[in-house]
Image (cartoon, rainbow, N blue to C red; front, side, top):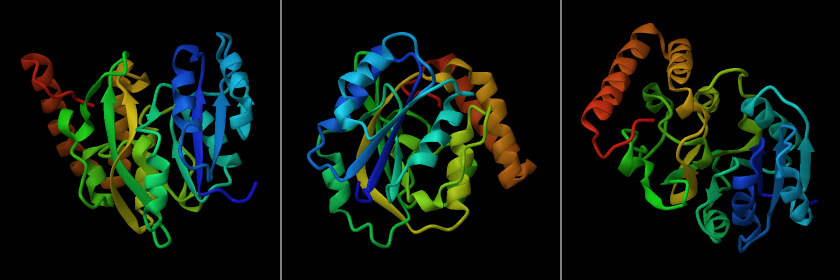
Length: 255
């Protein structure tokens, strides 16, 4: 196919209950200047049947054992042909059927990274609020490298870089998406805030289920990129906010 504007990449494993909604959010878009890539980890629960149902809308499909979510995402990067890459994993969805049209209407000719908000949803797809509204992470007006000292200040579901700017994800690290964003921003790309809610982000996920390992991995990444003192200060703040939320059950969710 002619070089598409976007490569939308979905990784999944035994995600039969979630995948169809993700696929439908892509194939129902009002514009079609994108390629759709699905990377499966060798599912055995009906996931492959769902992919087969939509095979005419999927440009590349790989199903094989992998070493985890970020290994699968790296496979997606390797086969992507689009100018920009957009990761939308099983359970996540594009925000509405016109979001790609709205992205296309932006002037992306001098942009290396475009980003935006995500809407948090529960397992019934109820909108809980944007990540800036509900969590302690407020999306910056103009995203830059220094913002990442606070952790994953922007969701990778709403961080859309040019493919040529992308680095591979590191393996076996629950916070590898933070490292990925930091490495891209460290190259000083031209960044555009879309002003849009780009995706629905399903609350929960691997890093929430393995919260303590996620914290350790995040500590290692922030220390490596920003130094021990900065990482220590930021993690004291992060841990304080997390404990405050758990003890006092505030409206905000810690991520």
